[in-house]
Amino acid sequence: MTAVSKVGPSSDAKRLKGINSSEVAKEVEEYSRGLLEQSSHFSQFFDNAAQALSEDLKLDIEALAEAISPEDKRRAGKSIYYKIQTFMPLVKQMADEKREH
Image 1: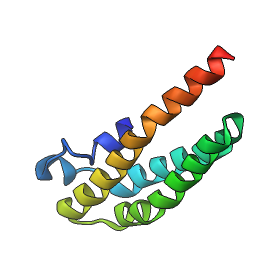
Image 2 (image 1 turned 135 degrees about the vertical axis):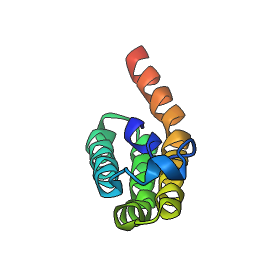
Image 3 (image 1 turned 90 degrees about the vertical axis):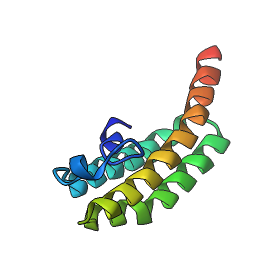
């Protein structure tokens, strides 16, 4: 989430000019891959949600990797940030349930 914060909702055009968006996209891609690898350790619901998030991030990752203008970087970054942010409570819930068992 830290990597995406660089291009997320709190970013501005001045800071985005120096950001290598393809490197941030690569980190998001690795996050997505890791999420899929770990999804089998949780319930079927989590597995489906992880797959859905991974699929949903594909176009955003491509857009971020190809972004040149600060506006394009921010648009793709915000989309990624909010999708991951929405997913995080599910991860915590599943981790808490697994820990209880």
